[in-house]
Amino acid sequence: MRIWRRGFIGTENQHFLEANHIKYKPCFSVKYPTRIQNYMFEVPEDNCAWPGLKVLLKGDHTFIHTEFTSGEISQAEWCIILGDHSIEALCAEGYGWHRQYYADQCSKCGSGWRQIAPFRIKKEPKLGKNQFSSFGSGFELFCTPLVLDEFDRQGISGFETRPIILDKEDRPIQGLKQLVVNAIAEPAIAEELVEHERYSQTDCPLCGRTWHADYVRGMLPLRRAALKPNTDFQLTDEWFGSGANARREILVSQRVVRAILENEWKGAELIPIQAV
Image (tube, rainbow, N blue to C red; front, side, top):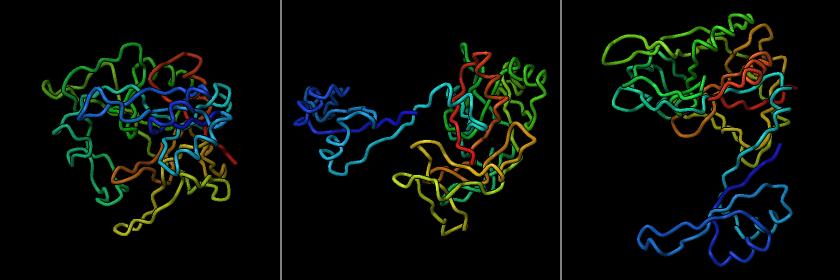
């Protein structure tokens, strides 16, 4: 596991970046396209220069990404799964949260929603070599018949499928279906183990639900006893996100993870959780 930081720093710090072999690139001014406004850098936290760079940033925000090893992913009891190939073709005014598809969503935090109709897309999706995909939002997960056939062969359970409708022809597309997960775990976050630099909880003043910040630094710790043991797919009880875009994370078992890795299927991001 390696935690990466990405951010922006003033041009006066170029010598520090170069002296410490920190990868960076210039960001140009919109008003003056030839003028370098600042530098965008990326550095892992285990780089010996990070503490000094952190001082230079003077509290400026950085984006955090955790890179997991293949061993950490394959050995995890459960992983969060996201579709990281976007087909970018959702109908309904171009917005994913249109009431054509969703109901009961809190207008403040975005939690509580349920999908009420199959998605409709504008054109046949371009998948390339990908077997998984989404609309790029992280809320939905699609897969090809190849995946469904292998899941059936292995007896992988815990999901249903829903068609994706080609809007103009009003028919299901043949090469892709939505994976729908209905089972929901019990509240599972191990409060004593979470990191607090970025993770936080907020009680919504409108609906009263708690929504959780996206867990970006390390593995999300979840209590094993709160997770359903006899299924391969389940949703977290907790809603994650910021603004009005909360969602429950989709958890998949080690069997699903190994099927994806062994078949070298593309289009899915797997994020291991820490089961305690």
